[in-house]
Every structure is written in structure tokens, then in C-alpha cells.
Image (cartoon, helix red, strand yellow):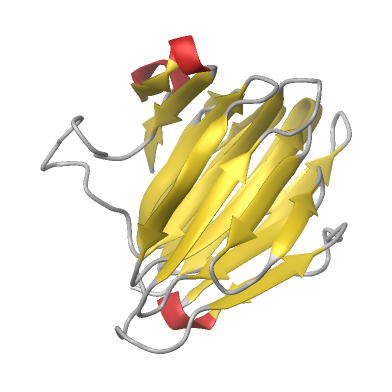
Length: 217
């Protein structure tokens, strides 16, 4: 298990424009050849947008983009004609495939925080697609078959426990709260990259929310 702390994330964004970003993987000008990916996962960005701030229309291709809103409301628009509002508890999944353009904004009057994760698909090409799962339940996994990955959301009360999937690769991201995992204490923004997970369990020291990616090798 390789633990990466919130304070180790690369700083990005444009604070003067109301955009603050924390990158878990090599990203843009923060190039790190030893931290390019973990399994299919190539980005796990914590994004903070002030009211009125956002990312103008820009292109993506050959990327599975999954977004989890922590607080506030995210406005999404794309070149395939989708326009949605993504709220806490919703899972947004944009499959860029051969190419799509989109924009993301905070059109609300309160700060927006979200976690955006990019995965590399096994095959290139195809048509872009868009899915919004409102209010996903803990028992409902969200599969990203193009990348051989499944996202599981876990919300735990104090003392609550959840099994870590027995899988070739598991990525655990702490959204809020504090958990203990294999002797390590993980807090908001911390992540664990686990290879060959077997019989592991996360225990909440206080109410917590986790994102767990289960991936094939």
C-alpha cells in the first residue's frame, strides 16, 4: 500500500480567476515520470471554484472522466448537447471517446468543490457518451467498463467499517472524515494505492466519505 498525503498534491489552477486545483498525479506543467498513473487512473484532481469561476470549453479525447461533487453545484455543458447540474451525491461520467468538448462552471453563489478522476480506456475511438447518476447509493457501484474499473462510494458513521474490494488494484480517496486502513490514518485529500488487496477493511474514526476504485491489472 502506497499512501499519498493531501499535502503532497501538485498545486494548480488560477487563484486570481477563482480556480484552485490539487493534482494527485503528474499533470500539465507538474511533470513527474514516476507518478504518471495507477492502473487505469491517470488523474484525481480536487477542484475548487469560486462563484462565477470555471473552465471554458475545451477538448478531451480517449479519456473516461468521472466527477464527484463535494459541495456546491457544478454546471456541465458539452458539444453533444448535454447541459446538467451536478450536485453532491451524483456521479457524472463523460466518456470522451474519439473527441468531445465541454465546459464546467460554478454558476451558483456559493463555493464549489469537486473531485474529478480521469481513466485511460483500453481502446481508442468510438462515440462520446454522457451519464449522470443522481444520488447514487453506497450499494450501487458505477462501472466504467471501457477502463476495466468500478467506482464504489462509501459513507461511514463513526466506527463504521467497509471492506476494501479484493482486487488487483484499488485506489482509495478520502473525501471527508478520517479512516484507519492497514495501520495508516487517512484524512481528507489523502489516498492509498493498493496492489493485490485482500481482506482489508477501512474503519471510520469519525463520519467519513470514501471513493474506492477497483481496477484490473
